[in-house]
Structures are given as structure tokens and as C-alpha cells.
Amino acid sequence: MPMGRPVALFLDMLAAERGASANTLAAYQRDLDDYAEFLGGQDKAAACATPDIRAYLAELTRRGLKGATVARRLSALRQFHRFLYVEGYRGDDPAAVLEGPKRGRPLPKVLSLAEVTRLIDTAHERAQAPAATPAEGARRARVACFVELLYATGLRVSELAALPAAAARAKGDAIIVRGKGNKERLVPLGEPARVAMAAYRTALAAARATREKAAREKAAGDKGAGKLEAGAKEEGRWLFPSSAASGHVTRQQVALDLKDLAAAAGIDAAKLSPHVLRHAFASHLLAHGAELRMVQTLLGHSDISTTQIYTHVLDERLKSLVRDLHPLADEDTE
Image (cartoon, rainbow, N blue to C red; front, side):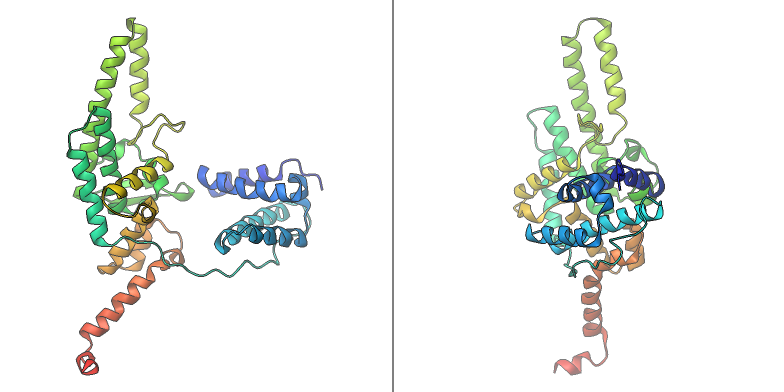
């Protein structure tokens, strides 16, 4: 069944009807391109049968991919073929009868409270130490801001990277965050995170002023100065501006900065990522008495089942409650 560009049609639907983010669309594109390459082209991918999909899943297993990755690929194929069937591009859904590999529920990687405290303290010590250049001072202040914001809010790294500059100017104790599916939510913001943002903006302004002064001295005439002002205006759109195509810092850069900080704090860099700080935010809240539904709202999870990966924390808390508060607990231990 010649289909032209079935994957492109599917991605257009995800963007238009489900509000899928650019990162989500890129992930689907990679998965479906790999599927099409295995089968020998986009048209064959659209016309394949159930045994073809089984063969592809078996190939993924032979490659050594984990069960969770294979299950994610199968989920993409199910949605893709369901789309083709519903839209009338083919008369059956070959992926509907397939079952994915059984997946365990690995516990999220979490830093201890002591490790997070050491990480934050190290970030601020580096930010306050004399820097060789204003640009280096701004970078250190930015890393401190990363840590404070991630641990204070539980933001996804994509949400952190794309925060608008207005977030630092927001009044009140919360900021509006645009998350998955273009959905907005209100996220409380503590004083340490606000102070870190203010310090970072001050350091960024100093670095920018130094850079602009050097550019003006080098540029000749009003034309060069005009270009400089236009660039500064564009740079002001984002809380964490950069020279990347998006105009703001990339997720990869945030991750690299955190690993560098982990090494300076004496923490295994492999243990730290932006998502690990998100896990720490949720786990530490639950361990100190927060309700699961509240954590779900703060994390921006649409389904409570996603938040339930943190129930191991609740289990431990309940055991502690029974052990410490049950009237017969002392008798049982004697």
C-alpha cells in the first residue's frame, strides 16, 4: 500500500491534536525511522503485517535493548498503526494484538538529603568565589540556579531550560510552567530559589555589559551598535539564554553542568542528572509527609499511576509510623 510519508502524517496528528512537544515528536521520529529502516522503507512500514512487527521487536532484543526501551518502541508502533487504521489508510491494525515485554518497576535514582545539601552548598561556594571573567561568574551562578530550581520545584529539564525571563520577575510565591502537551501549571517557588535566580540575573547582566562594551569598542559606527542592541533584546526572552538554535540553554548543557558540579561536590557524576533531582524533590516531599496527589500536581503528571513510582517512600514511612506509634510496637520488640 503506497503511503508516501505515513510517519510525517502521524507526527502532524500528534502535534496538532495532542500538543506533543518538539522533544516528543523527535523521539517518535527516531523510533519510527528505525522501524522503517528495518522493514526497508516508509511505505513497507505502513503496509506491514503482525509478523513483521514481531520480527522487529525480536531484532531490538537481539541488539541488547532493555525491556523498557522495547516496550516504548512497541507503544510508538501501536499508536502509529492505530492512526493509520482510524484514518482509513489501511483496513487493519497489525499491532493491536501484540503484547509488550514485561517490565519491572525500577525504583527511581534518588540523592539523599545530605547529598543534595552538599550539592547546593558546593554550587553556591563556586558561584561566590572570584571568577576569572564575568562570563565564568555568570556560568557558575547559572549552575547554582539550576540546582536550586530543580530541587525546589521538581521541574523537568526541558521545562527548566525553556523558562522565560519573566519567571525571574514574577511576583508572588509561584511561577507558571509550560509542561508536556503545552499544559500550564502553577509551581510554588521558595526563597532560596528566588535568591539564586536574582543572583544569576545580576551575574548575567554583568557578563552581558562586559561583552557589549568590548563589542562596541570593536565595532565601528552606529550600524554595529544597532545590531548589538537587537541581539541583546532577543537574548532577554529566556531566563537561561544561550547561542543554541532555540535561544535558550539546551537540556544536554544542563546535564553536563550538573555532572561537573557533582564531581566538585565529591558525588559520583553517574548518580546525578536533572531527572535525579526531580526524583529527589518528589521523594523527599513524600518522606516528610506530603500527599501523593499533591506531588502529582507539582510534577505535572496527568495520571497518578506515573507518580506511584514513589510509593516505596510511602511504604517506608508507613512502616515507621506503625513501628513508632502503634501501642503494641514496644511489646513486639521486647
